[in-house]
Length: 405
Figure (cartoon, rainbow, N blue to C red):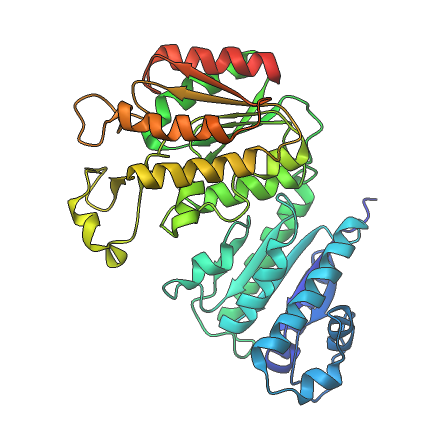
């Protein structure tokens, strides 16, 4: 007989005791072992969870007595999240849990999904939330995590027939994920490559991916629109990939200036720290996407390109190009593995093409010259007399990838 697998249930028994008890009952009924972690911060009754608030507080460097007495809600919440995260990661690394489920409203969902995002891509994560549809919260819950967000629609208050239906479906979904899906996804194949993708360099990305797949590589794409960049960096750091083709690292400048496609503080650093080979190009690097509500006076005078009615790219100024080049150099100079920078001389994307208002190859040279002056001599800059979307550029990326991966 197959040994039943274990699901970590995260809940707050001071507010969701009966509902959580039903989840445990349902998991046992369908031959899944529940392991309950209680994140309550004000509970008066004994917890009766396998991992009590005392365990969680201790793992977070405090005591439940200090938690109960404190009036600093944000501080004690962070302590509980830190403790729960440490416990969950330790359980996962020891092979003692195979999935994570949580149930809660806004506070419970925020805390539980923080814990879920600390676990690697691939382990099933399911959040039953009554606030999943509130504007802004769903993206906050998911972030860069592969979290299945289950909107309960009804309030999680009392074990009614409707709420039982929600919880039953969630439990069966979790059982299916842990029973039928292989969740061991660490990169054993040395031809596993991460690649950033973006609409204005989509043709290049498709061509490169198709060619490398014929050579036996597995190419995993990430949308370089901010969250995708951050997820890629996290997964590189966790050891999922053996190489990176970073066609669209515009998130470096977006983070530096605080704009909408912010790739996070680790953008363009994880591959270097892991020592894996990386090819870096320049799609969208010479453009920025500030929110309209944050436009400065001079932004209205900038050369721009409207991708659609919702998205506008503004061209960086010469001084901004120098600043972004400095960030690239700072990050890439720390790389432990080989780095090849590939710059198309006739435009850095389909947006950046002859005839379009932001196309300015001469001004782009400011970025390249600044970067070249700041980079370590061991890092090559390869210039190609083509637009990024031209076949010649794609072929040069493929050739370079076959040489260094």
